Image 1 (cartoon, one colour):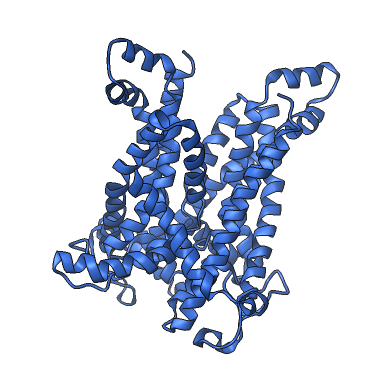
Image 2 (cartoon, one colour; image 1 turned 90 degrees about the vertical axis):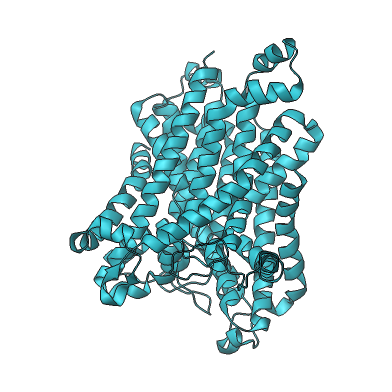
Length: 284
Length: 264
């Protein structure tokens, strides 16, 4: 039992070490600043600049968070504070169900609905022509994928705010919304931040759904109607075929390592926030 | 509120309604043949069976590792530093993107000299399932009242007997739920098996041969330029979605049922 425990808690470290070991080759021939800030990606000429991919990832993830955060917060407030328990009993399992749907299915949905919508309607409204395979499509599909996760976590955090906090505010004559806004939200804030960060981490590393709709053109996107090429898609499209060129292989490993480090950072941050909440409320 | 809910529901509706008409019996009972990706005869039996092999193998491995781990965390080391570290690192592992598992798995496989194979896919998926299972089991076992354990000790049971006969028994609904949750995640995950499991048109006969899977079937069929094949991708997506949804609903029902054996 002890060995199983040690084994499973070391997996994360093993993954990071293997990626690090494999990416030493590229790090020894290229400087880190060159890799991160150059946007020329020509593996055949031994030029590996991640800039376009990093910016692509940030665009898609940022857009997804911008779209999903406010609606999912409102939804979780409604579920936790206002919804009658019967309605909550229906919606909550449904949200959980949606959190478990495979990403390929979300990608399929976006291909059938979002890409044509952007190509035919949204682009015309904005006065541009596009194929529909854009940052916008990637952002929307990610937003929809992240929403159930954010709702689920933040709803639980809001419900965990102790009842006396609400009662004290009500007793001072605050309306329900004032109570939610000033008392409950303040108490739940770190937890909600953690929920958003967890969603961000999920969106950042999501591969298949984005890969299917985002266009995969290795250029720095300048508007939401441009195609982009996020890091996970880069790895998925090229890895495995490129084993013959050691530096290409190593460059993709470094990309994977970057992805892993960012996600680890965010998940540790979220965990720290949640631990802070527990200390404040569970003890008292 | 309605917009959020509407967009979420539209995912289900669009995939189910576009997929259902494209579904046919031959898709479920035949494997893909040479001309399949050009729009000719065939089905995706290879992918369905392949997914079943992959997920059952991965689940078997993951359960053998995670059950002892969860028991250990609760029975032997519940407040120790090791337990805190293990929980923290499993939470982090949970958030690791599945493409990373794929890359990691593939690197290890190259190291060991195996190509894309059923074995590789099983390994990658087992890694993916591990944190989900352990943390789900762990959470339930933590809820078990201390008194139950103490009564078991008072009757002269050893730690091991208590872990097996009291904790594991009492946590059974949670364990089932954790396993099914992990199975649901694993069956739909494409990124981790993209390199490790490969793809093939036949049903695998050995652990070292490549294997097809449902999520990749959806992905590859969508990638072809032929409308007939894309129709089949919708149908494959439909099958995958139905499997995932029924797993999720089954886990709810099973949990409710298993709860009746639990001492409150």
